[in-house]
Every structure is written in structure tokens, then in C-alpha cells.
Length: 513
Image (cartoon, rainbow, N blue to C red):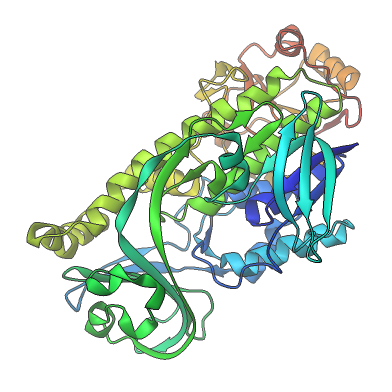
């Protein structure tokens, strides 16, 4: 029987299929569209996503194909207010300390090609008509392009089918929230007129604004803005000529060519539950929010990776079904917090009235410029936007603390003389880190249980990052810290897995110094 049926071949579904296959899970991925999307709103690939892409050798390919945004410029009423450097904004925090622009339509093609290299094809023009959880498996009725129907069974079904999710609706899962009143547009254009082509720009002009994101150095960019007048009442008839051009004109932007144009409404919703029996919601099927901070696509990708290692463990008989419940608790909590945070910022950006206009024109640029001059504030903002600050401290999988690092947190990144503690393992799996010297008992435990032990000679940089000398840090397969033990005890490692009825595999044991 098929292990997992993935419904939806956007970035979330594609990454989920990739990570499942890499862990030996039999996966099938379908999508009702003819091919990858050609218009997209998602532009940023965040640092945490790139860190996880290292696991399958995707990070270098995406970084080389993407565009590192050097800086963000803020304009108000035609005047340049502030320039915020972004090139190395996360230096010392991540091996990818920059903002990478890589449009979703390009991104999807890269992920599809990676799947094909593993011999997995996205089954296009294949629509999920209905599903039924039979207790031991999920039965799904599919319709193919020629109109023929098929009944297929899978142990689990992953719903990555977007904000209008057929799966979510058929299961009767609520999707509480709302819709912002404004109509937004996104346009792929060739433009000229800006002196610092290649940098990001936010131009504010009264109630009109435009965001300019270049994705190469030749003037190709995506424009994002709003439609605020009566034309928004009938968005189906909108063209690029209908959108506000005041903000563009105020900074001298000249659109030489419109390659494509699309419009959309922004929603803020979170599903009532992310798991129902053997069915899981991921990405926009489970949560949608404003595009502030470029979080949407990255959040879906992190959903996919979070669930993939847990499904693999249960399918391979290593862990009980209860492990799958941690997907919903970890990711749903983050989705609620993300919607709340982006809603506050988005409401300020889109608010009507003269006071709101004054705040956008003068207050926001002033605050942004001041904030990025303060190191601690800059670091906090980077961690928030890049998702390197995302933690699961309240998860049932998180335990202990050592130094400044707690279970559930992302391990601090440290690079000492070229020894990068984020270098990926040969296979996706559990690993133990010791900064200093591991005891003979810990070394023996790792060999016996097939867990890779990574031992790093203690350096001053490790202490500055918050790590404790000779402590044991157990990392989950998605590289968040599961256990932080200041005493470096093999008994603590053993108790961690025993208490969770988790059987460690024996495929990757060894020591890497």
C-alpha cells in the first residue's frame, strides 16, 4: 500500500514529497493543475528554509539561482527617507545571513526537477474528488484528465491543496478568521527609473503604496500594491492600468513592460485542527495570513519538513502514533502567533485616514531606520522574519536546558575555522552534538543506537553562542533541539526515547569530530 498521498504540488507539497522520499517513504503527489504556477506572490526564501534545504543539497542551488537583496529603501511622498542594509543582516546567526529573493514560480520548478531526479513525477490534471478515513488507511477517489476515475489507498494523506482546500472542506474543519477589505495586485515587470536598481523599495504616497522586489540585476521585478477605489469592487476586470500609479510616479518608476499581472484578496485564517485521523493539513490549507515579512511559503515548507520526519518514524515502526500529534500542536501554535503578528503590521500598512498616512510617511521610515541601527533590535527582527527564532519550547518533544539553549529551540549556528555545526548528515536523522568532550558512555550509546555523534573541539565562540561545554544536545531530524542535558549523560539520552516509546534506528551511527 502507498504510504503517503500528497494532494497539491505547490512548494509545501513538493517539499513534503521530497523529504518523505529521502527517508524511505513511498509517496505519490497529485495536483489538479496542468503545471507549476506561472504567477506568484511569494518571493522570499528565508534563512531557516535554506538551512533545512542543506539536508537534501538544495540550498546552494536555490541561493545561486536567487537574488540577494542588498538593501531596502523606504520612500515617502517622493523623498528617500531611509536605506536599510540587508546583505549580511544575519551575520553570526545563520550561514545564510541575507534576504534571498527567489520567486515561487521559479522555486517550484527547482523542486519539481529535484523530485524528478529521484524518479518521482507530479501527477498533473489529477483531482481529488473525495476521501474517507477507513481507520487503518485513507481511501481517495481521484479523477484524471481524460475523465476516468480511480480509487487509491494510502496510510496517510497530506493536504497541501491551498486556501480553498478540498480536503479541509470535505472533513468539515473550520477555517476561522477574516478577509481584509483591500484588493492587492502583483505584477511581473521590466522597469527603469530607479537609481539603485536591484535593491528593494517601499514607496508610500498617501494611501497608495508600492513594494518593488528585484529578482535580478537587469531590472526584472515584482510590484506589489493595493487597489483602493471603486475599481476594487469588480477585481475580475482589473488590469495593470487600473492600479494606483501615484507611488510609482513619486519615485520615478517607469514600467517598460508588464510580463504578467494578477490580483488577490488577503485572508487571515487558521484551521481549527491540523490533524484529523490519518489526514494532515499543511501550508495554506491550514493557515493563511498577510504577506508581511515573506512568511507564507516558508511557513508551509517548515510544516512539510516538520511532519515528514514524524510520518517516516511512525511508518517505519520507530515511533507511536502519538508522535504525529506533535505536528499539530507545534505548527498550529506557530500559525496562530504568525497570523497575530502579521495582522498588526498589515493593519498599520493598510489603514485609512490622514493619521495613518502620516505614520506611513514619517513614522514607519523613522522607526525602521532607528531600529536597524540597534544591534539587539536588528538581531531580533532578523530572527523573527528569517524564522531562525522559531522554537517549540512547549512541545512534548522538548526537554531540558544547557547553557542558554533550551529544548525546542533552534541550535545556535557556529562556524569555527571552517567547521560548520550545521553541516548536514549523510541521511536525515537524529544526531547528538557535544561541544567539548563526549563521555565514553555517550559515545557508546550513540554507536549502539545508530545516532550520529558530532563532537566539536571547545572554542570561545561556542560559549558566546550560548552553548555549554561538554553538555549533550540531542537534535531532532529537522535539527531543532529535542534535549539539552548539561551533564552530558547517556542515561538521559536513553530516558528521553524510552519515555516516548521511540525506537532509534541503526543506520547512521558513528562519530564525526
